Image (tube, rainbow, N blue to C red):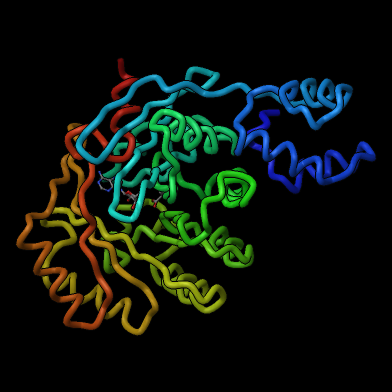
Length: 339
Ligand code: SAH
């Protein structure tokens, strides 16, 4: 097992099972994430026989940065995994700090019509260590601390629920990567049963839901998941989520030219969201070579924004990052896989 995929709680149980004190887990975490050593034999407050046992049970092996692509305030990383699969992550410089967008799966089975990642089917889940290491390697590369994380890269995080939960707990641990829960955002296309599980976790993370359409007919065409989990039920689940967690939910809406960007659709979206504690993020579509959808033009995006605003909906237009370095979801990986 890779040590970077282990929650502190699990390491405590590991020590307790051997009749060792559970605070040893805390000591190991300090070595891993504060002092950043990469061998148990450097952990001088752990006794020799225990170092040897740990060394037999856990590995420090790291995934590798295969490629980097840079822009003014964006840096994209392609990672090579042990089995020669690839995933990507994006570093973004905001005025409030550095954030990283991580991948949660190799490929994705959700098959959204506009999405590059979904053209390549899911090969496997990522292990929690593979998600933790995306962040660690970027921190090491730039010699700076990451202050927020969005799980919006390749994959559907709620389709890899257990590993993603472990990942969140490790990066949120004050003795782990110490990223505050309110600085962690999980984005889902709307896997209802897993959203219900998530609302019981008692985490203070942010949830974003990829809606992309104001009615079920259009959503059916754009997002196959809508056939399994209907828009109506999704809206009910979001309401329940807000009620149970007392957290505002983000609604993501990519702006696709002549598909979901007209005034009627804006009004429809406003009435769908009326009275809910949500905020809408309008996302200018990142065009890709393989897919025919085009980005809505600026005037239409602004008009759409105005309509929502006038109807009392909280809305922002997402600032764009990295459209000239293939930073659209999955573009770098799909190039590499083809090569
Ligand atoms: N599977 C999750 C998270 C990964 S996708 C989800 O569906 O939310 C992250 C976000 O990027 C989603 O809102 C997705 O619809 C959107 N997206 C996918 N392709 C895009 C593109 N080319 N341009 C802009 N946003 C895109």
